[in-house]
Length: 326
Image (cartoon, rainbow, N blue to C red; front, side, top):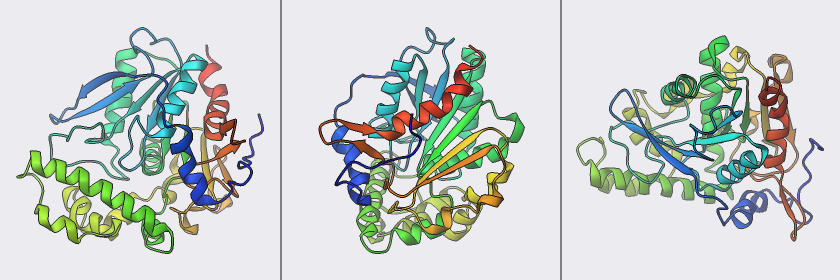
């Protein structure tokens, strides 16, 4: 397979690339097997499996971490789930707290550097389904989180390989990027999604958030949301402190397993600061920067036969790590 991405003719524009998956992946081909996993602190996360995990415990496994306010229903998530099932792999989307359609129980939620639920789930996966080759892929926020987790775990990570896609590896510049030009459209959408999620939580648990519901209407950017909610809920001084502590780019040299990072140079969510200096990366990290692709877009082929390049590139790159021991 050609590892280089070629955008669909007439669709090289980054905003078109970003939006096309929502057009071509509108219909969900398969319903997942849902499972609720209780967490040590009394909260929960929901899992969407490609098939019954107990019956597929011997298969190679791919864990998917979604982006900001994403879920199994995000086009990249259920599209990859279908691909994995066709390959004979077991795939699961681990939903961050509050992202599966039901507010979580505790004040804390999730953020770009929150790795404890990921650590718990991957250890649980190994303990309950036994040893089998396992990899992970993180998209956008989930990609930055995955980078933080891999760096924290070092050689102890229970994964054979990982892929990070369209991740805001430097959080502060990316939050600034979303306040400029056409990218403000995405900022408005993301903030709107976060505010809706927060309203649902406030209506169900009015006592656990430090923010009155009326104050939400005064939040207009991700930085303002992170200052008002993310930082105080998760123990950071403010958004700047959060961004500094949870940006994965400075942590990449601490990662020990094979890792592929995919970025589009024209990603409207990203600032140039997310692109690492090649000499700073260890040999186990492969960095692929494409000219086009938008944000988690990468749609090639033709209008009559579109090709979701990520659904080809990610499994193809992971195959040597997931199938070599079978």
